[in-house]
Length: 209
Ligand SMILES: [Zn+2]
Image (tube, rainbow, N blue to C red; front, side):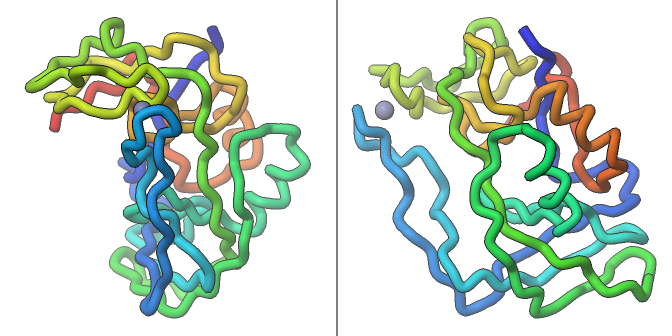
C-alpha cells in the first residue's frame, strides 16, 4: 500500500499559513447524500460567485488556503503545476475573487497570488475503523456500508484505510471531510516548494474530539 498522509489545515511552522472565509453574500448548495441511506455525505457545497477573504499568519501567502467547508483554495502556480503533473483527485479550479486580506503575522507587502477553488474527490476507499483504533461513544447502528456515516466517535489512534485509493488527494468513506493525500502528492509539493500544504503521516494522525 502506498504511504498516506493527512492534509492538516495548520502548518506548525507558520511560514505561509493562509486561511480563508467565504466572502458575503455567498451561495451554498444542499449537501450531497448517500445513494443507499440518504444521509448527508458532504458539507454544504459552495456555489459561484466565488469570493473570499484571506487571513495570513506567516510571512508569505500559501499555495493552499483552508476554510471551513470541503473547499480549498490553491494558487495559480499550484494549479498550473498540478494540471501538468498527471496526478488526480482535485476537481473545480474555478477562479476566486479575493475581496479582503487580513495579515495577522508579518506585515509583508506582496499582493496575494491568484487563487482557484478546488475540492478533494471522494474516493471509493474506506476508513478502517478497527485498524485505526477508533473509540466510540456510540457506534453507528446500523452501519451503512456505502457511506459509513453515523455513530459518535471519541477519536482514533491513527488513520488506516481498507483499500488503496486510486486518487492522489481524496476523502474516504467513513472519515467525513478529512482530506488525505498519498506519497506522490507529497513528492509533488516538495519538488516544487509549494507552501502551506502541511502533512502528517497517517499512522501518526491520532485525533480526539
Ligand atoms: Zn449511507
